[in-house]
Amino acid sequence: MTYSDHLITPKLANVPDGTEVAMARKKLVFGQTICQLEDSNHLIGDISALRQQIDSVGYLLLRGFFDPALVSKARTEILNYMSSQGVLQGGATIDQTTASSKHHGVRFTHSVIQQLPGFLEVVNSNRIMSFFDSFLGGPSMSLDHKWLRATPPGQNTGAHCDVVYMGAGSKELYTVWTALDDISLEMGPLAVCLDSHQHQRLKETYGASDAHQDLLEGWFSRDPYEVMEKLGFRWASTPFQAGDIMIFGMYLMHGSLDNLSARFRLSCDTRYQLADAEVDWRHMGETPDQIPKAKERISIQDARANWGI
Ligand SMILES: O=C(O)CCC(=O)C(=O)O
Image (cartoon, helix red, strand yellow):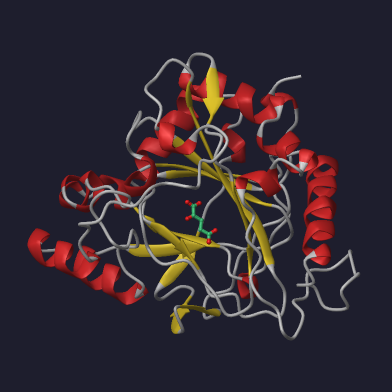
């Protein structure tokens, strides 16, 4: 069975204009300051059309990509782990993701993730690997470092491009962001800046730096309006269902909406490239998250002042 042997009809309705969400506590309004991501399910099976689409709009949203049974198994396993860490309301409740009132975040280190075989079965599945074999035109591989996130209530991810975190190998590296649960707009899903992958000045400056070596902070900005006003970007997001994925390249600016719910938002982001291309070894092996930090890194504010963006 290959990735294209199933076709799922997107079930989610359009987000009505006027719907309000937040990013870093700043309000964004659908139809005004944020728009809806469009899925590319109609292109599944046509690799050259998928490649054209990602080159043109910067992302591929594929609804229902992963087998729901596998995702559900991974979710249960993750929730069991979270329950054992005492972060879920009621301690032992496994079927929901409500944060306990005294919740502290939960960190999924590489060694914790190795104890989650159901999760690894999703992100290393034949479905995703065969997709990338076709998409990249050769045998593909996934970086060992897997970012599994249980984003707590009140939090979000600031605007950044992945190249600054994992750009030491091939730049033909793709992020797959996977919804491991149904993620409403209120729960703070992924948000991307449309066309940001084509911003030449951003690529040559911020996009040529390395958060581990050069920058104290990899996030370009915490303020969603700043990237709209300074770089002319438009934000886009959508509600997700468990098993939906977003694929994007290293230069697409993205972050997430605020999690305004009482629940943890469960998602992961994992990376894929050609197996024979150069690899960012900092994200491989047994301790991929233990990256030694260079001493003389500069703040993103100082770097941006130098770049003039
Ligand atoms: O899920 C998030 O909050 C951020 C995801 C992200 O930064 C990524 O997929 O590269």
